[in-house]
Image 1 (tube, each protein chain N blue to C red):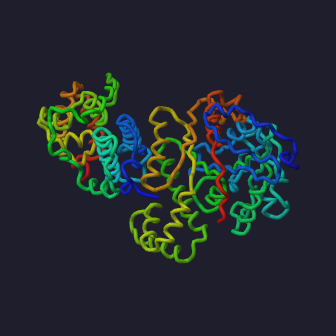
Image 2 (cartoon, helix red, strand yellow):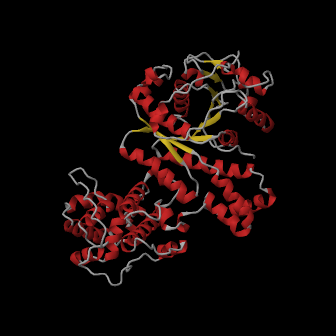
Image 3 (cartoon, chains in turn brown, yellow):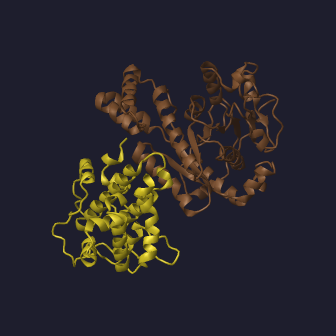
Length: 337
Length: 207
């Protein structure tokens, strides 16, 4: 199966995201040499709309003239094909991990939406759902070289390394949250896990690791917050602390609040940004809201494909705002770590 | 990378140093509302004590900036980041030693618009403060008129329930204060009591 993102046809970008009011728009690389923008959709909890956001955002970006590849990174339980009313693809990430395919790009299958292709998650094999470290690194490198304007990673639930690593790999990591305590708690936990992982990945040397270990141990009983951790290291090793601090400032997760039903639900987005900044020292940015629509629930229940014609015009508008904000973000400089 | 205790008041409220009194007020209102004690955004990341400290830190920063903006537009006083922390431990109960009860605070700030209150409006400490400020009443004035200690009125406005006396006394304060502002006293207490009880569950339930 060939990936149609390989085609050299130039794609005109639609200008309608100018309506979002953002001006600075980085140019998208059209040549296959320019890497695409990698966006990861996570959130730490199941059933909060990660796949809904992934699929609708992908469709919205396609509608804006971009070539999009959607990768189902829920290796243990892939289901994006179902949400697009497709049969389970014959070739999946399994084939890449088991070295039956050389690149991820060749596993991309076209979807009913022209311009959108899907790379499906692993099927069945336990060793594929829980890839070993080296396999994962190979997979992560391969994600970076998938030819597309936007590579959308739909992450599974949870905060373990296999998920967090893909979140950190992306240029933009998006957290989906619904206005429920468990979702908020898991999102904060995910943030902390991702931050700690980022520090660990950054090659800061054994001293920092020792200092971090020390700092984590010393706060018995209470979870240490990222900002306290950095502060502790700063006290002991100012220079290393400064590097940590720099590492931290390049960590800018994004937020989408799903299932907004009332005004105070919408305040959650601002509140989480304000709280993360003041309590964790982490800057997160709100991309937008998806309101709660009966139509969406209906589509899931009736197993309709997640196309805007089934989800409704309002949801399309909500996701349009999210997409506009996302595309207006500058591409972060590549992380050398 | 700084935690809120160490942020200067401008950074804490996310306003620029040249911000007007109105901008400062809006920033404070937005933040104190989205980070109000008990809000979902603070779930699992701040315990009750931390939530109160955060709310108080916002309030202290707000008062400092408002004073700076209204008294001395050209030369905002140099506020060291530490100052806010010190104030946190010792809330500015007597921040204005020469407070003139007849002078509205702040002297030159435009009176903010009174929030609309109807039969469905949830009465909160924040709402009471907005009503008080819309009437250009200072905390000291209200304290004199209601004979409630200024600190208690401030705590009601912040919904800092652990700083208030027992339920029966707090109820009296809330009734008197809302009456002073022309708010239905019983309804005000009905709204506020729920959160009071959440912050301080009755003793017998604890056993």
